[in-house]
Image (tube, rainbow, N blue to C red; front, side, top):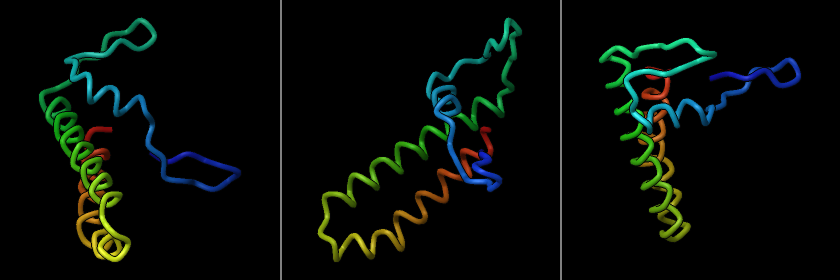
Length: 93
């Protein structure tokens, strides 16, 4: 989740993690080795996708609204939605 950029750590989300959650497979092959996911990991992936879709809807809603309303949205809906997404990401990763 963190990447080192010039000696500094930055928060980043790897597309492969989201892809894995979206595919919802019970296992994953890495370098010819099969890794079987527990029920907890599969559930965490489902939660991550739900939070991602909620985040996507919140961003789309913000784009449609006027700037005045967006300011309030960013302080409430967006912050809460993004926090839920970030927590779900951490559980799955």
